[in-house]
Length: 375
Image (cartoon, rainbow, N blue to C red; front, side):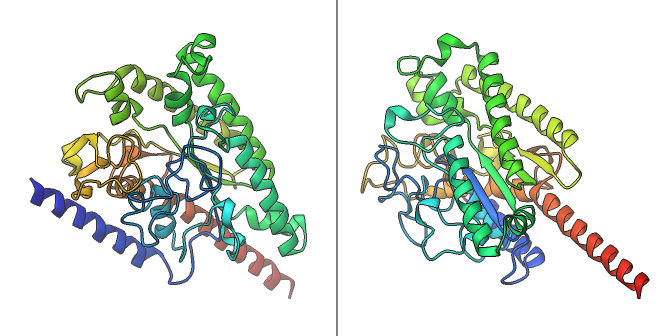
């Protein structure tokens, strides 16, 4: 079985290399810029200097990352790191907290560990950068881009070509609604009402992002939070998923899918929203992972703790966050869902990017024809 697992992962790595050779011109990314919003699943260092216990800038975090511990909540690359590579970027997108020496025209990562859609989510751990605050940070960057390019209009034209990735909401359940001893949400809302409240708040933030020039969105659905080691252990299920938690994520994801349809119908043809279902991949051996109910680095994953050696066999790095191996599965499925067609809706990231390239070519051809007709 271990041999089968390794063979499967080797095939995945081959697919990654194949995609990059086929679709990435050396030194040229498929979109000019990428802006990232989210939580610890995407954080690359924004929490390092914050007064919060939600930090990961110490070993064994980053044990498999080329630069070591950076503030990523996994052993290696995050899902969006891998998507960034698949899109052809030569460097990872820098965190907002440290853009010094970086080209912000390539994009910025605003994600913050512990953050949620709601501003209070994660506050029990200390300071977090909620989605609304991440959007405020984006406004700062948009202003800087306008200065660099010479005018707000030029900045807007440029920003309309960028990709916007949002992966947030898990903490609003795990670190808020399902912690009634710390937060009042479960006493105010039913689960259905809470999902609707989250979607409405997310909708307002997406509209604000659209007003700042965003046109191509990748929205990540919630994962199966009831199958995380942290939740299973806290409920004493002996490795069985907690269905109440999973039911909550299914409800939210269904509402998020409806929001994608709503926005795709509301906005002009050059705006496109897609959904990636991070919870759709079953956490089982069928995907080549031997361990899906325990963490490679358990019990809090404390500084200098020794993790497991067979990290590619594990779905979870710590009690909550996935390993780089699992991030690889999700990233490939999000980028080119021919591997798992149900993973994305209504298209995958590659198709979204290709649509923009096609639209640009059609625009250039039309402009060339008009010029020829006037000569």
